[in-house]
Each structure stands twice: as structure tokens, then as C-alpha cells.
Amino acid sequence: MRFHLSAAAAAAFASMVVATPASALTQDVDLTFVIDRSGSMGGEFSFLGGAIAGFLADIETSPLVGTARGALVTYTGSARLEQDLTDDPTVLATAFGTVSTSGSTENAVRAERDAAFNLGIGYGSGRVKSLILITDEDADDFFSSGGAGLRAELIAGGFLNNIIFEPGSGSSDTQYEQMAISSLTDNDPAAALFSITDFRTDREGFLADFTAAKLREIEEEITENRIPLPGALPLAVLGVGALVGVARRRRNSA
Image (cartoon, rainbow, N blue to C red; front, top):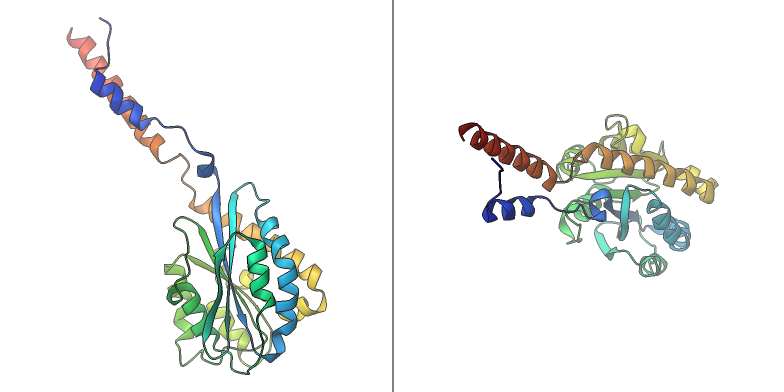
């Protein structure tokens, strides 16, 4: 006895078996720079304005990465959104170039919390999300703003958190170790911490090293969270099994 799928069963099966789009093989990335705009940070904005296009392009060289978008948040006492996430490096470079640095208060905890949750930044669903904090001071509001709990909040929100800071500046070492988040080495905060002193000593060399480390981190984050099969395929496999089972039962009863 030959078995034929009914029209309804054939339609149901066809709806489950779908081609996997190319975008399913990669994951997009959202990177928000959170930068202290106090008076000593002018050199960082100037350099990054010229380097940001190359940085995003290098992130996109990974075969696991689709589109990399960047945003810029600056802060002193409070945080300010200079540029929402964009995949246009020219727009982002312009935002870096127009920041005016002044002031001496660095409320880093509030700035990161705002960058993640309170400034309306358009983070995309299913994208790798990362904050990149850059400062040469400790977090003045670490104790008043609950800095010790920020890491857990960011992890719950799905964020990585890289911090480029000045080691040995006040209590910055202890503070930023509690705030940093990396997907590498089982979320060892040390993998997410970088020295702004090294940045200022050799900007080009530092950026090359930081980019390589960031790529490794992003790729590990994507790999750890990747579902082995495209979302519709497991359903299709189950559907095939169910239909084969029906066919066998009908043959056996004939």
C-alpha cells in the first residue's frame, strides 16, 4: 500500500521546512561607548573619532558577526546620549568629534546604568550587547549609586561590560573589578579590564590589541548562545518523525 500525504499534512510539513536565511548564521553586535567627558579626556575623543570606523569594520570581519553598530554616551555628573546606535561610522565619528570636555566629577555607575537601561538606546533583540567604559578616574558614585550591584543588573540585561581605566587611581581597581563583565574565562572580570595608561602610551597598538580581545569575546558570546539547529529545523525533524510514524501504522493495519 502506497502512502500519500493529505493536502493538509503536506501544507503543514512545508510550513515547517524553511530555508535558513544567511542572517541566521551570524549575530549582530551593539557596542555603546560610555566615556568620561571630564577635562582630561580630550585626547581619547579625538583619537577615537578618527579610529571608530576602522574599529567597527574590524569587528565585522568575524565570520560570526553580521552588522556592528556603535553608540556614544558621555558623562561627568550625569550621562548624556551623544549618538544612538548607528551602523554609519561617519555619523558616529562626527559625534566623537563634537564632544566638549570639561568638569571633574565622574559618576561612572550612573552613566553605565543609564546607557544600558535609561537613555532609550535602541538595542536590538537577539544582538550581542556590550558597554565599553573609558575613564581615567574612579567611579565617584560607586557607593551612593549601588556600584556593587551594577554587574548583576547588566548581566541580567544581557550586557558585556569592558572597562578601560587607570589602575591604581583611588579605589578604581576594586570598583571596576566589580563592574566588569566578560564572556571569556567564565566571566572573569579581569578579561574585561584594560589600562588607559597603555592606551595613552601607544594608541594604535592598544586599539589593535583591544579589538582582537573584543573579537574573541564577541565570538565566544555568540558561540555559547548559539542554538545548534535553526529554529524551524527541530520542528521539521519532529514533523518528519510523526508523519513517518503515521505511515507505518497505516501500512501495518492495511
